Image 1: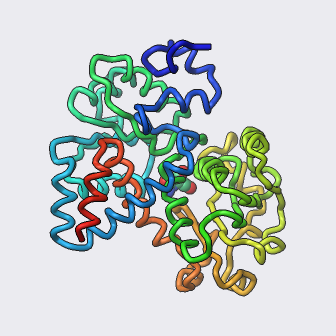
Image 2: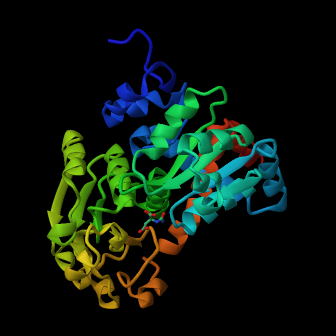
Length: 361
Ligand code: NCD
């Protein structure tokens, strides 16, 4: 037993590294909310609902010039650093747009070949440099675990600033999962919310970090059934199955896409993550064509169901599907900007101010 709650500042890196995910998540809190945002495991239902309502307030305020001006005054005294050493379009741009909505100036490092890392600077020193100039760091990297290491380093430095994980290795993508949940909240608003829904994940489930984070967030809702549809080589990994079992989630794994479509309330399509192939061309040997959402599949889908995709898309959703009202992936993408604005505003405790401004509208 510990006398005081464990925090990043009273635990060694070696001890932190060895904690379970939920214990780690508890170390990242700042009183009633997250400080660093690293894992989907940090969010409970109450927080998901709070952030969803805040995103909606921001979205509606941003429709008018006056509302937008109020939003842009909120954080004009803060600065954001976007440190993206792994390719990104949506996540990067939506964070940049979210910062603009809140009046936050943004700087970026996207190519470490033009930063001092190229001269041999350690990641720790680079991140401490950013924290000298900026008030929080949004970080995407191909190195799993790097964001948490940097969060620990910063928390134990003279100038701690929060880190938001914008995608780490094959492991976690918590803010994508937040926007996915926000999209589901909005899609099922008139259908009793997310509780009791059937969510089907399709594609590369072993290496897709968005699936791993969203599968966890869905465990915050009751009676949600999760169906993982993938070729056996790309099925969701054992650690996620273990987490789902620990939360008594009803889930099943299958390689038959068409068989499960008629039951699905949400179909979450993903691309093959071949950049993680251990041998070049490895995933090209797997027949993934059976896991494509074709125009004809729309007939198998319930009228109120929705199709999501974190994007980028390749051929796993036929472009002609886009025109169907159940294809919500473009709206889902835009939701990323709203929920990220909500997360940042909440991190800096502007939530009440936003709700008040929204109440006056
Ligand atoms: C995802 C990612 O980077 O994990 N993209 C995103 O952030 N929307 C999905 C992917 O790359 O397939």
